[in-house]
Image (spheres, rainbow, N blue to C red):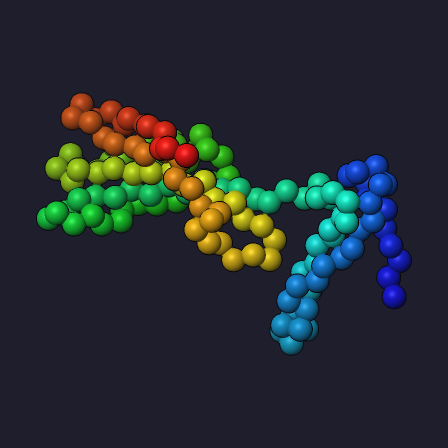
Length: 136
């Protein structure tokens, strides 16, 4: 039996429980189990991880094809990478791209609810990248 642990994130008002996931599979594989401490009062100071994904699309023969793509934990870094990727495409490819904000939480599978397109980028005739916010 484990001893209860006071939560330090909410100044001891809550008690922590340990949630173990993948314990059977980890034992079979000989790996350490994954565990997370959850406070019964607050979120325990563990926030879900967020990532910013960027994708470039090119229109070839009337069909949109996925080009370069990547991910970063910072929005500005994703915008810079998308800007560079769009500038490297040929002007006749009619390239455009977008930035996706995605939230990952422990033990959950990424789905469309945790994914939101926040910027759309286009390449104009002068070779400049124009960003526009998408509707919420």
